[in-house]
Length: 80
Image (tube, rainbow, N blue to C red):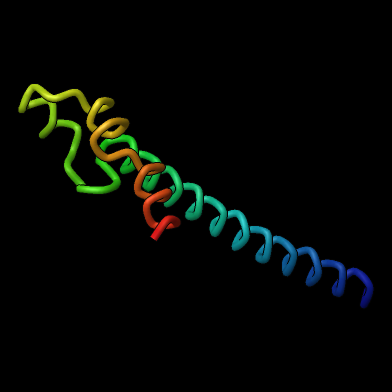
C-alpha cells in the first residue's frame, strides 16, 4: 500500500514537471517565431517595415541587401 502511494506521488510530480517544461518550451518557440517574423518584415538597421518600403516603390530585398546590409555594418564595427 505504501509503495503504491509513493509511486502515485512520483507519477503526479513528474507529470507536473513535464507539463511546466512543455509550457516553457512552447512559450520559447512562440517568442522565437515572433522574432523571426519581425526580422522578415522589418529592416534590422532602420526598423522600417516592408509595407512602408513597398508603398514608396522600393524593393525590400534591395533595401536590406544593398542599403542596409547587416554584414557591412558588422565588418565596419570590427574594423573600427
